[in-house]
Length: 510
Image 1 (cartoon, rainbow, N blue to C red):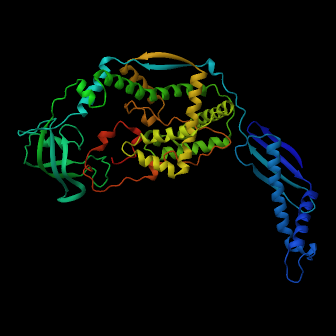
Image 2: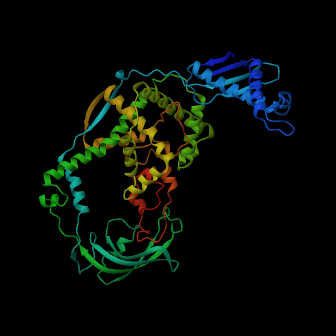
Image 3: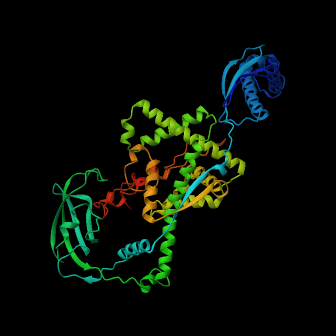
């Protein structure tokens, strides 16, 4: 086998391969000899079939098989001998296959680039530290008190804001009851904002035994499209009215939550707050690291990987409403996706190289934690999420890339970069996190002012085993919410979730 380099340009390697005709002929003759011993053909005894007859009958197929085997072997030998890190199987072009002539063909390899890991010790990253004050913990305690209110005191007078009413209700549109609009002995705190705007206000002033006609318009953006924007009337029966009982913030209150005293409860609240802010802080630090690395990575990016990443980004963009992106010209969209894809691929390749050098691996505990982290995004349905990943290996596999990325980033922060701690009050930290989230979001999301961290910051680990065919949102897409009769169907759920951008696709609350 003779090999000639046609092109060797960093990530592109083109080789012309020549295989002598005698090698093809030898393989064909070898197969003919085997066939002559075993072939069962009418008119001939087993083992007595002339090779000339077999060659005439099977010659074309035998040659095709021999050529195929030689090409496969050549690819394997070249890849091994040259120690090539290939993105995929090479393209095979310009095959010359004529009897009595040497066989020739061209192999076009796309290779991983040579990646130089930056000197992380020259990188400094700010590490925000939450400095909690007593008032911060007091605020959380007040919220806890609010959610712990008991409504045992019967109110025989008119219901006021803050009272709890127990109601029966039937909803009508155009005089006909609609599915999911019936409530039975439902408890509602007036002023909670749980129901659609205007509903609760019309119950203020009612007394036990009253029949109330509540007229409200469903919001135009209501999740149930058959109800969105329509005027409705609810026939409401007030069964009971209860006022909240006073809650004392003392050791006895803390003991209801299994804490020895109020001091221990405050300590736990402080710990929980540190944990809550811990994740967005990590995300912010990671994005700061990626921003610095983006300008330091100078290697060439394989076109195949870049094209794949662009397709992923285009698919993701098509699945969400992004008005500003939609209004961009085709050229601007192309540039936007190309720039973002280049960043993601470069970072992904660098992280893959870092993982390889430092021999980082994923263990069972890492995967279990990743599943539990996903489950936390669906309160009350954790078991569903866990079962989903256990039953869908492809979706489970999709968790490994982000887990490995996080492990690499964690190692870099712990052992490589210089961390500069800086204390922030709760209010200032929230503003900092909101700004960072805004800076790293698509243009259409930059003005939502909700302060949430964009969680999809993974840059895809790219290695020899990389696969982009998995679905990051497998669960969300596979699971369809039921629109069955539900006592809470006519609640305004958008008010409950308007600060949860990643739950836009969750149309109902279970």
